[in-house]
Length: 483
Image (cartoon, rainbow, N blue to C red; front, side):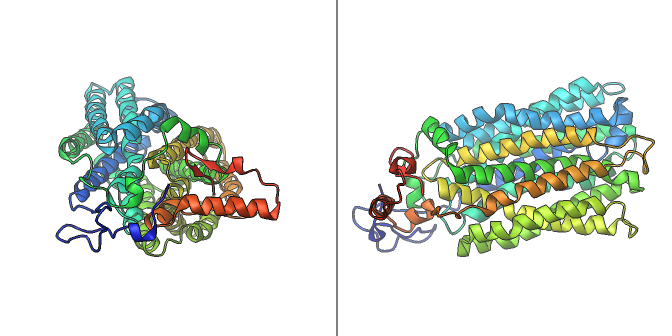
């Protein structure tokens, strides 16, 4: 299955006509309306992530309001992350069978209900922690529907000239929401009695952000590119084959680890810094620096990746920087230079992590085509949320006691994150090594490369050279084979 180069027309934009389309060929076109759906994904990801860290940035204040421990407040983040994992199978099915719009509508519905239930729990006299937790879990169930949708949406609506940027904009809106939560919530709830007001503001924002979901277009009238028009491998065979693919695991393991540590560090940042004399506001600024610098980095790298397609090279540069940043984070909070080293490390960690995120997601889609994009991205995100929940529990357990110097220090927790981050680093660096030829299959198809002919040539070369490679191991979907 494939297209000859002469059969692939150029994608065209609104207000233009297709150039040199063959009489029998399809007319590929991109539509301006695609930005409406992209904007809605951005809004939902901002709000759902802001909701996640509602209480983390003010963990001490929230614990006093609800009359619970800070560990109980941590469970508001942890339960949210576990809820993501529970919803993931439904997310894959919804995106695979219905596309992005049903997933966006589910997100909006759960977001509305969850936020107002949280407010009911917060508004009750003295706060009812169990009701707040239930609302938080509903919001956690909403998150995977909008966080896993960007790769599916960009594949459905964008060409190869804009997919990475579209995925970056929608995906990185999620940590942007976390940054806003870190920065703003500490000002909204400086005292325990201000916690219900903070939750109310977020419920109103969630309501406003959810309404447009019901009015966005579901699919483009015509596909934007050849790969978008290609029939995807059925869901169950695709999942089965993906889990047997070495390159998928080389991406999944570090993705899960680094997203997990971003989740845990974001949730515990106040507890990491406060033993060294820093305030909740200082922690909020550090979290904001982490994410704002990361967004700037991604805004630079994503268009460059769309232009030059240097996916693997970018991964090999940024992964070691991420690992080194977690090592440096061990030494930053107790530094005699004050809060500045922590701010610097947060900036470096944010720039490398956020620059890496959309590149990895799009590269995974490229090398696993014709598997539907949401399969790999949802599995990767689920691993990140699951490990994030586990890391929060582990790092909370590694917190020093009140008799330590300084009391309640998170040094052991940070050493744990540094060690695991370094262990995960070699996996993506091995992609394409040891004689494995990893192709950007979706890009090849858009450029007119006949993938069947390429694969047959490889199999013939294997037979001629007598390397003993079993061609059955190269199968990749019903008609495509592994690179």
